[in-house]
Length: 319
Image 1 (tube, rainbow, N blue to C red):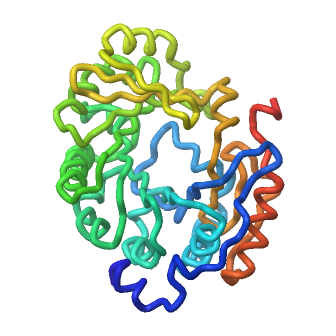
Image 2 (cartoon, rainbow, N blue to C red):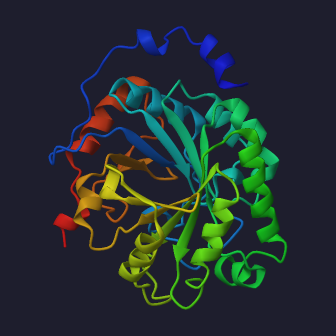
């Protein structure tokens, strides 16, 4: 069932929904986006994975249900939430992920972050279901390094590259490639990835500073990377969200994501997270004050959303 068919079956359409007050936390940050982890299952084992800040996998089999997701999103929409991003684990490991997307109400944007290995199989179905865009993890273009970083098999990188092509073909654009910069491992491939992004105008490269919780390598010199990008850029655009800079380099669009020691990253955060087992989570790096939403009705979701947002606190204010 695609989203258009689903919406026709719902008597309470978006323009008929009761309006609720916007979700604004004590630091005057308005929530306009939900980041929903739908599973902790994954077919890879990336060395830098932070599991969306979830500290235990003891209940990995307890996955948030489709009904809970739909009720949450419909309630959040009434409070002004415009965007949904699905994450995991690997969201495409859920056999019902296409149905999850199809059952959502109409939103400004629905996207997913995926490792891309299964994307060629589902890209067109996801586009038909109402998905707008994908982020694909791609840290290297070298097969041996891909295996080192992700634990994937010898053909895994080819599957990801095929998935990127399928996503572009299905119109899930712009496809954003997430390159986590790993010092001494892939930091010599920045320009190779930029060239790859340049080869298709529907592809954007995001170079992401490592959030290292396990000591896998030293942090790369992001200042030096930024200087190199600035030197070659014909245009530099600063996004409002997190004050990120985008560099236009000979037809390639490159965005630098620097969350470490960046108070603006927190100050402009407009996102509320949802754990894979169905709990509202105010911050990636905080696990206090989690609020369970499993089994809650759409009406109950309003209260739970407001309660969670009222407890949000920027991580940088804690350190």
